[in-house]
Picture 1 (cartoon, helix red, strand yellow):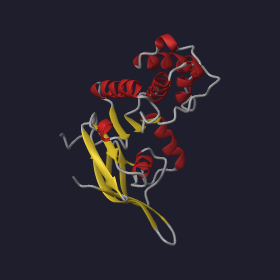
Picture 2 (cartoon, helix red, strand yellow):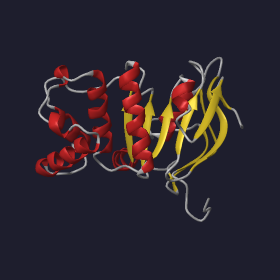
Picture 3 (cartoon, one colour):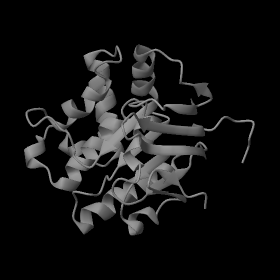
Picture 4 (tube, helix red, strand yellow):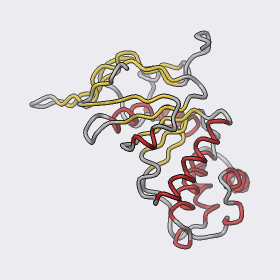
Length: 227
């Protein structure tokens, strides 16, 4: 590992707590380094701190202690507007729920991923078509979500996350609503994206899903297992 190159994600004693009484430690102080091109799974039972961890990485929440650097940039003191802009450019999100607009076509749903980045409509649609081709759905560009299978809808959601060519892809239980066959297809797609150089952080409760990652982080009761 080249330590001269800043990691995509660097946590130094990052923690998040909620004032009480009693005080709730959603995430206890943890230090994590995720280098460019890594594929890391975060596992743990419900309430272990997985979502809090991912929300901090995704700039949706701020830590109450510690230091977080994204691509070498200390994001702790950034204004919320700057964090929102950075999140839109650098981070893609894939959720268990697909969050597709039912009255918009696949290509329109993907194009929404650049709606607030100052990109023209024609350029958004061009980028959306490219992203759909990346996930093998170029032939379904004009399909409505109601006509797509669960696996296809998740691939559209992944394409939407990829449209801005983010540095980091955050996946929250991306196979949770899929049958075994479609889940396998999504995991194969994530693996292919990682092979192309995409940095991936994925939350899952399924150890079989986590086994496909290069590294597994375990959370329990808000604490990160150092192993």
